[in-house]
Picture 1: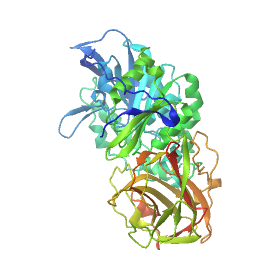
Picture 2: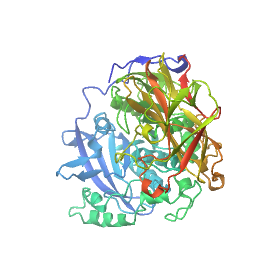
Picture 3: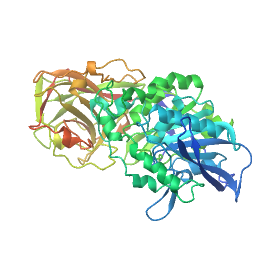
Picture 4: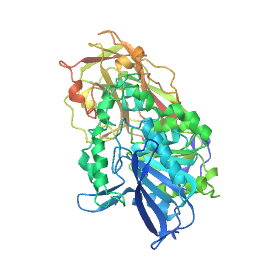
Length: 579
């Protein structure tokens, strides 16, 4: 990481010239006292709860303290293959160990159907799980060690449990920190009508849950074995998503329109009315960050946008100190200056590991202007194949470029949170070497006039940054089925980006050979593309991150044609101070 600094915020907004102050070196509580037990929720299902109380030596703090609650499907306490005990509550990945030191009780519970908890998971973050979260928040708040105020923190699935629990507005829940979660399950998991890497992996075997440590009273592990046996009735996650191609599909596994049940955006007004403080977090090289921005805009919450990958605490930023100060302010009433801090903290990537932090009261991209670039005929100076063309500042003569979908793709990593360059597998259009730096902030939006020789076909789009040596990096990407091209008014704030309803009545096949127009937003960007670098747009019909790619393969592969002219362009979000 290069030198980090704070600078003036977007569109001239003032910035704070310091990162959050760290946890005091002389932490109040160096030790921890742990207990675990089963807590029944409203339908009688017993959930495994692990409680970590701040202590000095073997004596837990006797005064009442605020509680930080984590609700996980990934087993709160396990014995690893090497025999070591791993406890989520004692990790500092989400600042939990530091929060204990700072005078918080931390509670980590296994969701029903996972870990040491009883029950079966009916769906994936369904209302039952949300109500379980409500019940546990209220139970924790009523315990003799608690002040009655509870906060929640989580990332990825754990961020989802925070969001869904907040949607039930437990009276004791005062502040939440939501990382890498979605505001709308359908438009995330089946973005553009296409499932991809997220949420489609196979379910873990029951042996994984049997590695959980029993609660304290379960000395022989018999309760654990009984609980895990109930997990065999869990709804399979990937099968649930694959069974519902449309937003209003009824799942044969749950018997209802499950996308609607799992849609958190419906509860945004309730969360705001309840006065729950909200802070959302995403990193720029992570697909859920689009939804982090949508959530921040819809809730009016604080936001942290950092460098790095999925759920990785941002390097060069005092992540732990930020969380402690946030919860100190909302759960302890600390007058620590947090309330005066601008609501958005975001990293701007300047290349070669360098960058800067910006603080502002505006979300990235909200002050950007659209700079349109157009695919054009002719071969670029960095052409690798006959499918490589130019990306120009003005629309050229009308024309068309075709390719046959290439299914022979390099294998993706099992957790491929970010896309790789795909220019060898479709059409590519490369712009000129930049003469000046270009600051991109927000969502690139692709507009295409496109046709295919079938009644439907997927379109994948990638925006690459190509350095002077020819090394490429994907900086944004998106996907859309041609049949899902219809846009409408979103039920949440999409920051002006196109929203595809995905409802069965709005999905329509295309006529083979006839061009249709579509618009899709790529993942958001916050970076300065340096002089001498080029931007490249790539269009393909398949992506290796699709776990079910072999099932989607068509023979012969469809032919996709991009029709060049005014109707085909990419709008780049350029900071207004960039020329």
